Length: 263
Ligand code: NDP
Ligand code: 8X3
Image 1: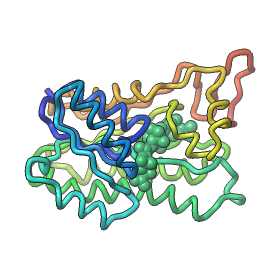
Image 2 (image 1 turned 180 degrees about the vertical axis):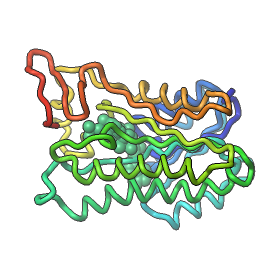
Image 3 (image 1 turned 90 degrees about the vertical axis):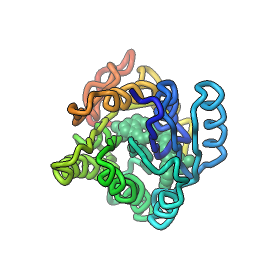
């Protein structure tokens, strides 16, 4: 069903984006994998070509940069222009400080990536989907887009914004066959918390005592959205680790359940 479909993935150099690339590759899709770290993408592309005999196009892309996005999309080779599926995955958080202690520079990065970047990439790719009468946009949101937790402030706001855009975009696309889905993961072990805290030891300690989701768990949900028949639009999937009881509540072995604290 996905054989030779063209899938464009943002943030494919790590975590969920990389796992999505691997999952789509296993189904024979053709992949445009993007992120800022081209060296990682090049290595991933080689692995995917070797193991799945598929076409892969690795491209350096900073989704904060709207000019770069348009240049990249406009200069795609003819055989790569007909993007069937866009996975808006790239995103990050900086810090879990209360807002009154937060860094406006960090806020800009988080807003420019998670929210504006997703808008820019969608704006660049969607018109060609509409023109061809085919396409599927899958946004990676978060349980942080459905709730609020201590220190979540700007990150939560960007993921709530992603949810609003997912809903509004489906309305904007009324009368077209383009589908819009959102996958909202709970805590997933990736480089996310290392980026968030700039402290690998703290990130590693965070995952102790419970079993987080793996990036592959999220990729399965993304693929599930993508493999439905054309008349089925999976609007949203939310998934938690079994040890996460609410967006702000993780139960670690030997500890009392703790709500409202992300540490
Ligand atoms: P990782 O840090 O492992 O991966 C993040 C990816 O985003 C990297 O490939 C990174 O690539 C890319 N990225 C970051 N900034 C930019 C940018 N400006 N332009 C292009 N690419 C960028 O984290 P995850 O895999 O966990 O995160 C993927 C998504 O999942 C994010 O949207 C995150 O908010 C969301 N999420 C994460 C959860 C978690 O617990 N981990 C839970 C719920 C949602 P590079 O640095 O090479 O550009
Ligand atoms: C990231 C989820 O709860 O770790 O989207 O901030 S959380």
